[in-house]
Amino acid sequence: QVQLVQSGAEVKKPGASVKVSCKAFGYSFTSYYMHWVRQAPGQGLEWMGTINTSDGETRYVEKVQGRVAMTRDTSTTTLYMELSDLRSDDTAVYFCARGGWLELWPFEYWGQGTLVTVSS
Amino acid sequence: DFQMTQSPSSLSASVGDTVTITCRASQGISNLVAWYQQKPGKVPKVLIYAVSTLQSGVPSRFSGSGSGRDFTLTISSLQPEDVATYYCQSYNSVPWTFGPGTRVEIK
Image (cartoon, rainbow over all chains, first blue to last red; front, side, top):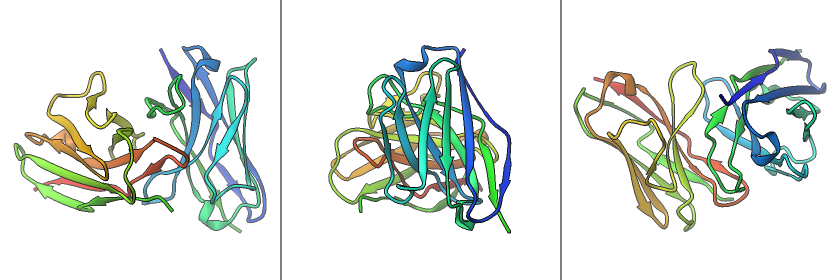
């Protein structure tokens, strides 16, 4: 069955970078768009960006543009999200989520989430 | 900037009540609106997509409607397991945008 398994929690200092992974199981990896969503403690959901897993094309929310890079490794069916120049307000649980084979599709499957804590 | 607002931000209702949550887009959008349920400490789960299509496996007491700027999630006959935060989402263009959420509790 479809599973998205994310890497473990991270603690980083302000100004550092973090790279979160999301390994996909149980479906054709390059047939579906993938997304990253984050949720600050006690707050709502914030969409960060999407990647076309077939050709690697990405689109990001303006708020993190220039600090985020979403990539994928088709040989290992793994998605990556790297966020640089971390700030305290980047502290959040980061989720990967599978979209559809069409770009405009909701998120049916989610990873378990990765807590990233930014603290000096 | 495009925004989705939700009302109310929280509500408390009795088991068996009908609950309605409203989402308003800052501009008219297509029918690419979804609703998610997130229980405490859990991952979000899609309930409704394309405004009114029920995701497979979701109980039929959940329904969605709306068009233009205004969209609604209705829970008929609220159950104890429906305690959660509910988010609307517009996915018709970048950025995919979530509403701020509505917390639903049992009275």
